[in-house]
Length: 442
Image 1 (spheres, one colour):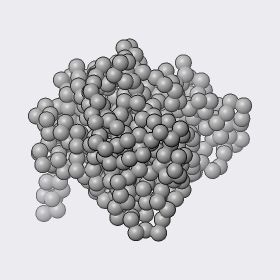
Image 2: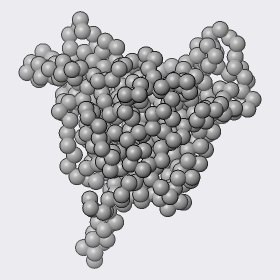
Image 3: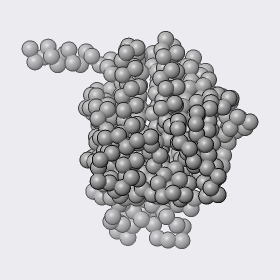
Image 4: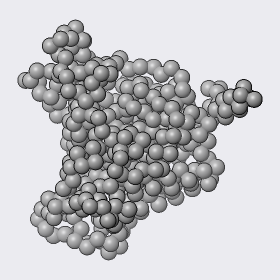
């Protein structure tokens, strides 16, 4: 009887040869969600039942890294398959996609995919070469401008080339608001974008699709925090209304739980449409947690056991929660500890879609990890943010916060919190990782 049950269990997972051809791919990415913000990654104060269930039903990545420690370059890395040594920017400097930039959406479009996205774009507006519909997307709904995405109550979003009005919202004329704070708040942007994502899935359920869901929550409205001390813009505090917390804490928690609920809505839709077994869902965050808008990341221990937060190259700024869910392919309750990063998404998506990977890229496919097979390892991972640099090779992590300062070397297997600098004791390791720093920018 036991052998029969084992056989039935194993038969529910497909072999490599039987992997669904051209599966749907949904990449859900929140904004400024920390490594410790989810229950399945150790959070104790904020409720995330749907994401915790997603982790139980899928794979949790313990060593998954964003492209950068801030928004725009992290997205640039995600879409082009390149780390910060090979991207045009390594900070939030303005950048519009150029015609020579090749995105994962363009590549999957050549393989017969419908391509769509909602949320924060940040790579160029309607009149620029960076507009999403000029870079492989058939559909985009949300914010095109990164700064405007701070405001959860804008007068409009963008639906492809046209403005999509949000009724009742009025922009404040306060000089510190910079046009990014509403004086009259009626229509919250988040559910509008989520409804558009649901519509895209329904419309394209019979053909392979790539969908980016780039929610802005739980990013703070930075300007709102400066103008009136609270940048955590939500229509209500939900289950946290009666907690003995500051309003900024209630708002932060409400954002995370709202996000969690909407992940559940998307998963429920896939099941309703009976396309869950041919859909890979990856959930993650664009960088580490923020301390902005009147909220501090320490309140909910948002970086978990990691050191640092947004704008740091310690792991708290770049290691992010990540979950992969694909019924029948990804074995439930599994964990992947292989160090992987945003620039691995492009080759992964291309392998699943049967699209050719352009060269050069810095990423490697993690399809084997999804299948529970031996995953190819990176020789090293590299990040840059302004003058800061970092590299990880296996268990070793080098952080160079300033070229004029002494480097920091950490053994992440024994020191996840990056507290013990071993640079003075591990000279050969330090020299090897410093070589990677030089090699990464060639």
